[in-house]
Length: 351
Image (cartoon, rainbow, N blue to C red; front, side, top):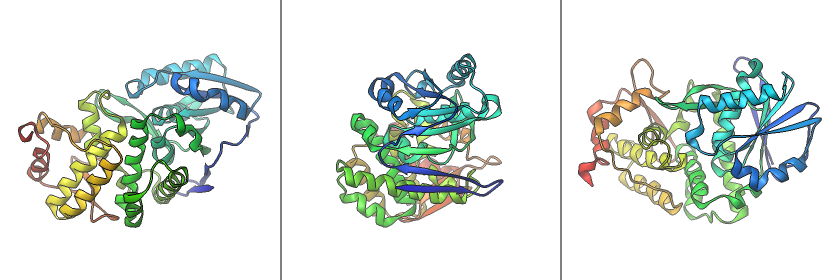
């Protein structure tokens, strides 16, 4: 199964997303695999049997969002120089979204840009992070604030890697699938309400549909000047939650799930979403074993952190909200007090 990407903004860029058993991959240049100890232990041996190249190097970096930093990128860069990779060499991102984001960013800046491919091993990275060319790292001011749009040469999605995925990690990926359904496809949302997430055939269909929806968006808007911003549903609130908890309490998908619930509260307040629709989304998130509640300690501080979001332009905060299930609204210039009213539903005094 192949989902094509075709970008035509500044130049035509095409590549394929392969959803199937990982094939044998042959390269005529040096290959460096970037991974973490967990994935290396579980799956590196299998990957190495699939790669035919003159030289293959392995770079292992620490596991976790806390290591998604410029310091780790510099570690990868130093290894590439030590291994004498040149402009014709290739990087392989072998892991979850953190590995994919950092490998892609490193590829974009090493000798001013070399090729890379994505082999995502988590559900979240298979349906979201590996598709579309967003790369980057976090810093003290927020998530993914340093990075680049840099497209891979190919993406290979093999659901076999998911068999060793912890349940929390799996659920975090389902959050991104639900996000796509709420924003773009009510029929897909209805399908998810009764889908057996543990069925391999159903899971592959969920991945296929999510990847097709994201490819449809990215093909229209590579660099988030329009519709691609809709993919940030749940993220504006979720990124603040991740920052407040220092990236060590919630997985990214878990924070996005909570962010979706907060966004839905605002959408109900503005009349874009009915309480019944909001409850349906919450129920589906709960069915996927995702957290749906969060205690905001300081409403004013939480609100101020919105201004560090990449979607802020000219001092105006942009909120991505559902406008019924299967449609979206990009809301700008919402009165601060209306937003804070919704936040207070999650404030300490309400618990």
